[in-house]
Image (cartoon, rainbow, N blue to C red; front, side, top):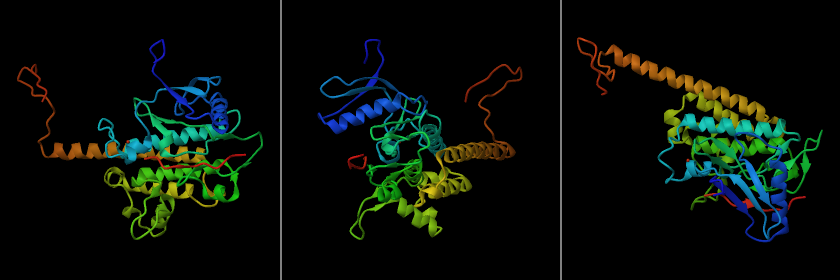
Length: 312
């Protein structure tokens, strides 16, 4: 708590490490260029202490990873399909902003559900810009050793060491699949098979026209089928091995927002239909009872381990 009563979050290096200190400085430089409601806000920093400190707005409701995967997640937040779509659309909008609306395009490089925070109103906030990179004017990619988190890292970037905006698109595609399936990015090994990536598991199901087999039960129950399939197809496009075949984040954000609006309309239509059926049976409870004088009324969302290659 600051002297004015404001609650903040402090991020600091655990060890005196030159590489980590560079990441902190990098995070400060990049976040100073960013002003977006779906990106965590940097309030201040101290780089002259024994270990660097960054001061952020406090984002109280944990990570998206927690709300998808933790059985002990808060019961106060109805993690519905509508809320999933809103979070996905908001994160996509933030990434589209980073790629196209900042002074220089910013590539996050470590998009994953544990780097998406939820505030007191469960608004999504993209966080952790320690390994992010910015592109120079006219630059389309950066040549750098692969850095990111296993299960989310773009395989094309991993093989070519060429980082592009489409690398973030791939990672976001994995987050979309997490929301659709409720599965973690790296599916644990069993006696019969080794651990495997969620992306390839999802793509196999899509190729076999067997999406229903891996959908989260909540999504299957609440989601309008056409909309869920559209999100799945969008995720599949984001996960294309060929980065050039993936949509850009602006296209992803627009499509998700349109799907969210359509889903909300479908929900309203369903409720109206249900009300109509109740009215037709003549047993609708209006919530109040009138008298002859018409005057009386009675109210009746575990993090996976990052790949820690050095960067150039």
